[in-house]
Length: 152
Image (cartoon, rainbow, N blue to C red; front, side, top):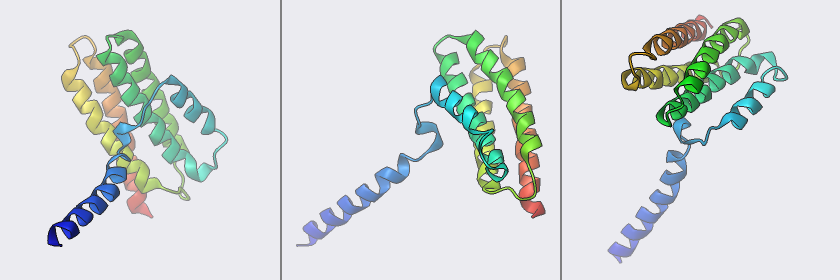
């Protein structure tokens, strides 16, 4: 009887834990279509949502750039990193006092900065300048977002 209770408890825990693990930001399948769809959604979103959507776009572009770099498409990855730098500027301009989910945006940017640091360590010396510049922009955006969160 005791082993049956343990088995049921374990099965219930596994059923609950698996969906929680699958919600990690890096486990989403990201391709150019999802990035384009998110880019198209940002201008039509409410101003309160735009900062978070820009942070999500930066994260998706970073993950896709790392995927391209790993596949040997360094030129495409570098172009995407340069686009990320432009999006971080748009993120800065979209921040307002009435932002919704600003803390979530800050957390996502912090995670993106961590992933870019990994990217920096794995990239060749030729590509490091672009990765470092992108990392600096994302770190700056994350700091500004965090200050805005604490400003409230």
